[in-house]
Amino acid sequence: MGVGVLLALAVVQPAKADSFSFSFTPDQAACSSMGVACVDSGSGTIFTLPADNSITYRGTYPITGMSGVFDGFSLSWVAQGQEDIWGGGLANFECPCGNPVTFMANGQEWGLVRFDIGPAPYTWLADYSNPTNPLEPINLTIVKTPEPSTLLLLGIGLVVWFRNKLV
Image (tube, rainbow, N blue to C red; front, side, top):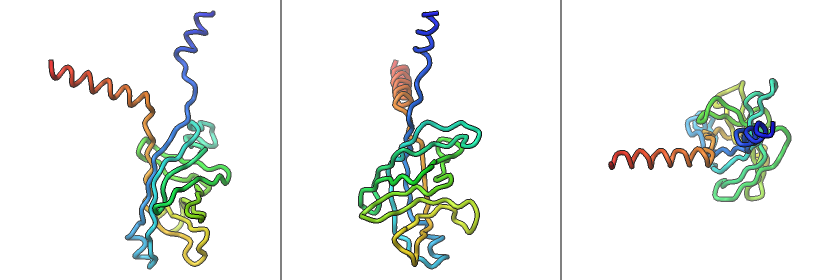
C-alpha cells in the first residue's frame, strides 16, 4: 500500500494555475462604420486558476489577476466577481464569459466586454469614465502561455533533433 501511495504521489501532479497572454487594438473598420474615434490598445498577462470542469462552468478559467500595459500606462486588475475566460483551444480564447474583465490604468477604470448578441463586433473596450462614448470596438487576442515543462520538453526535443542531424 505504501508503494501505491508513493507511486500516486510521483505520477499525480497538483493542479497548477494558468496564465494567458492578451493584446488588443482598435477595430478600425468597426470604428469607421460607427463614426467613433478608436485609439486605445493594451497587452499583458491574465492569471487564472485551473480550468473549471463543473457542469455549469465547463472549460472556464476563473481569473485571479492581470498585469500589463494600456496606452503606455501600467494596468492592474479590479476584481468584480465571477470573471472568467473561456475558449475552444490554445489559440482560440475569448474574454470574458459573462462579467467584464475590469482594470485600472492612468487613474481610470476600463473593462474588456464581450456581447454574444447585438451588433458586431462582439468584443469591446468599456470606458467607465466616459458616458458619451463608453464602448470602443476592439480586436482582442488571448493565447494560453505554455507551461515551463512544455517548453523544457520542446527544448530537449529540438536539441536531440539537431544533434541527430549533425551526426
